[in-house]
Length: 388
Image (cartoon, rainbow, N blue to C red; front, side, top):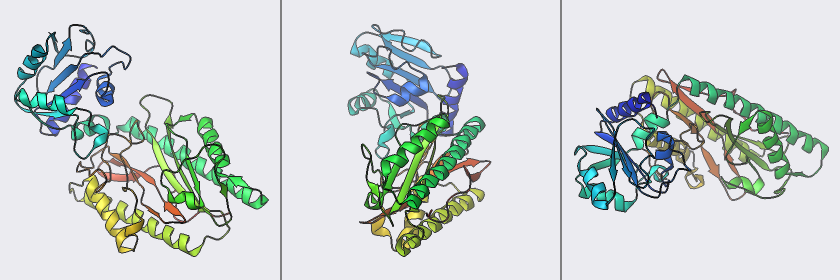
């Protein structure tokens, strides 16, 4: 970590109105700490270490005598401990201010601090608050390079979906059995062709399988039958450590004309997606603080008003950065309620979905915020069901 990165950490602390940011790790359990501080995940970490970054002034590294060099690449002074009492004394030496820690009662994705260590901080007289906002500001906001990386990935995914659907149409026209696995393999080849990487194969879900938002299969999967809804979900990024993911979902019907129920449901989903986007646009333009939970509430109210309350299975969206499910604000008010604000550089999905016993539908776009304006990435987003 450079001195400049340390200053960025401190800027995040001050922006969140906290006194400091307290990093802690043991056996590399806290992936976020290792990632932000550039700690080698293969370095020995058999003893706890701590890195205390105050809002102003010098950072403090607290390391064990057995592994005294693990934080040497970080700016700041170093204090080596041997006994547990020494570690506690180091904690007590810190300013008695409000420290951001990797813990949250609503965001398990960032909650790495164990209860025992949290209790130890309290015993040392240190008050703590969730570092969720800090993590978003440092890791979950895109700069111009990040936006450009995300945009390139988005455009490649949009092209891949179009080519994959052309393959679906070929299968339909030929009247031959078409399997979910064939189309998934086609999409995987598209990612390779585009020099993109992903942490999981794309979702291709047909018929009743489309009613499962995270449907997966081994082998060839199920046969796509005439009249089936076919749901695509694909996410990937360029092959670089700092590249930004894109994540989109499109839907079609394995037929020349969509069934009335599916067409109406998808039309309603698109309406909700667009109204939620306009809600974000209006609130940001007015300078109103807007949380991810508020966006999700808006989407749920709209879906409920259209009669789909019982068909909602998931939140409206998630943060996107170097991870598909990133460190930024999620559009979520009930699963993992996220009170963090949508900020300049935020990037997230909007993916309202509704799921029934015989099929499900989801439409997903990605949005990033630049100069206070939400921008939809990629190419022309889907407004009508794909057909054969």
